[in-house]
Amino acid sequence: MNVRRSAAALAAIGVLAAAAPATAATQSPSPSPKAAIPSGLYGTSDPTYDGVWRQSLTLVAQRTLGYRPAAQAVDWLTGQQCANGAFAAFRAAPAKACDGKVMVDTNSTAAAVQALKAAGGHDDAVGKAVTWLKSVQNKDGGWGYSPGGASDTNSTSVVIGALTAAGTDPADVRRSGKSPYDLLAAMSLPCDQDGGGALAFQPDKKGKLAANADATAAGVLGALGKGFVVQAGKAPAGDACTKAGRPARIADNAGAYLAAAVGRTGHLRSALPGAKDQPDFGNTADTVVALAADGRTEQAKKAYGWLEKNAGPWAAQSGPAAYAQLILAAHAVGAQPGDFGGTSLVRSLNALGPLPQMAATGYQQETKSDGGSGFGVWWFVGVCLVAGIGVGFLLSGRKKRQP
View 1 (cartoon, rainbow, N blue to C red):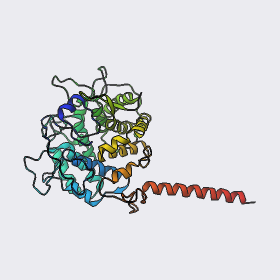
View 2: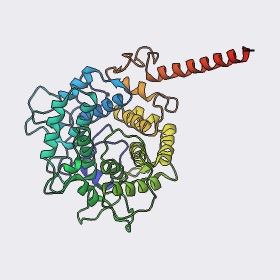
View 3: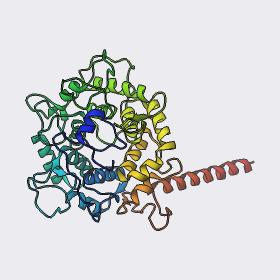
View 4: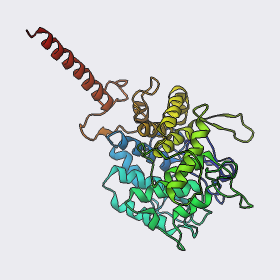
């Protein structure tokens, strides 16, 4: 996720090369000159439309790997928060108080909540952000990208992840008697329709729902009450789509749709208007996480295997959020992000900003200057494995020498 996608494109196709947050139909920011990259922010591309999002995913991925994020990186994120608790995609002048011209949004705010909760020690900032999110919930129980904007599956799901991370049960967060799960149920396509079980991003102007793989992957996590980080769940009873009602049923129906979508090739495809049909790396990574969360580990591992063979160049071009997505996908299926098709996702991500430290050992992993010779978690695991093998040979030899 390097750039914000426009709302019109998202509502029409719901796919893009990386998992950017949803953009509201009422908000269409005009292009701005390239912003300078602030100290502490990961990545080298213009952060105008994705600064908080990519920083948040980076910090979450680092914590998932066992790192303590650099204080400079966390401070940059906390400095982006407005006094009312909300976050915008990027504020070039964070010392200036937020006013009506600052376009705060639910996606950036919800992502920041998950990152700051993972980083620890920022309960006040997290609490203010959650309070703001609750205050802009729509009457249908969901959230749109912009405060007051029409609810969509992606925004609602990322807010659910934030509520869960903050220790709040999403089912208890209601407006006009409806919770976010009611919104997801309303976005779930009936089983007897084309794309049954999938979720739509939003209804079209006539109220019709259309299956959207990006929204479906987000909706699986939302229906399960999950955030960015998941572990393999319990396998569903079957693949048959049945009438959605309970959140778990919504997730299983959506998971079956995604499993079928990646079943033949191991990946999703993106057909942007006027562009060549091509593999969709970002949504495939999100699908790996969703399938794993829904207990469909076989299909998740197949899709991850495809990413491992093909997604390296995409991540290198896309930047920190893409590396973070792949790390979270690796975590979901129990793979090692230190060896992603011969590339270290860990080293590649950490090289794009302030170096974190291992929370447990204090060792810095894979520094920029030594090309990856620093001590780190995968290095440590490797040493332990080698040591274990050596001890095994030693004990075996001793037994052979005993009379």
